[in-house]
Structure formats: structure tokens, C-alpha cells
Length: 159
Image (tube, rainbow, N blue to C red; front, side):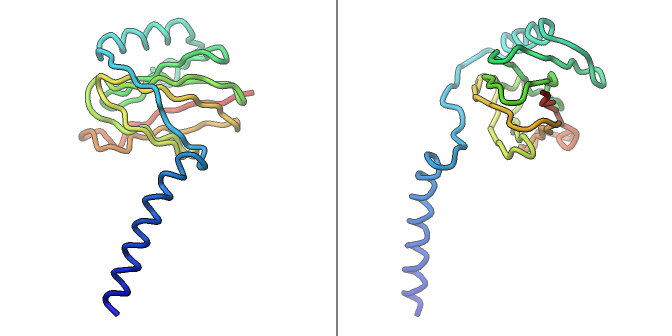
């Protein structure tokens, strides 16, 4: 009996291993294949210039930016915020750049269930195409200190 459970465990482990590889191709959740080394202060300056160029408003002291469709969009993570807030058009593709200027953070876009590790010194590039209007929440899913539970961001998707 014990050898049977060992065999089931080994076979299940092999199945899960190969299914993870297959899911990369069939799951339509392929993440960044583009990553660049970047100095945190230089990345922060790039994001600030981007926000200033496309700012259309403000929410609770955070700029709301509306870049043209197809534009590269820049977001930074820092204790304890995602900056700035985006207003993107439904059905349009954007190249989303993510980097941290201090600690390791986790970018979790809900309810889209997109999860990415965000590290200082690395610009992660993802292609995103919002398919429904509404407000999407960004939460940090890597513990980053005492204010971690308040590290929330937003992406507004509009017509």
C-alpha cells in the first residue's frame, strides 16, 4: 500500500511539473520577457516626467495620468504606494513598465489576477490590454514593512 502512495505522489509531481510548462503556452498569462537594469533614481525621474506629461487630474494627492493608446506607461512602487494612477482605454494595448525604488514589492492586479515581482534596479515590461471598463485595484503581495497593508494603487479603464 505504501509503495502505491509513493507512486501516486511521484506521478502527480511529474504531471504538475509538465503542466506548469504547458500552462505557460496555453494559459494566456505569459508575463514579462523584457526586463532591463535601471538605476532606481533614474527610473523615478522617468516616471515623474511621464506623469507630468500626461496628468489629467489627481486623486488623494496622487496624479491621474491618461496616456495615448499604445504608449509606454510607467508605474513605480515605493513605500507604501503605487504611483501614479492610470486611466487607460478599454481594448487598447499598453506596454506597462514596473520597478521599485526601494524594496521588493509584489504587483497584484485585481480582479485580473496578474501577479509580478517588482524589484529595485529592474524595469519589468508587460503588455496589457484592458478588456473591461471599471476600476482595477493594485495590491502589494510581498510584505514590505509596517505600511504594507495600505499599499494600494488603481487603474481606471474607460471607453
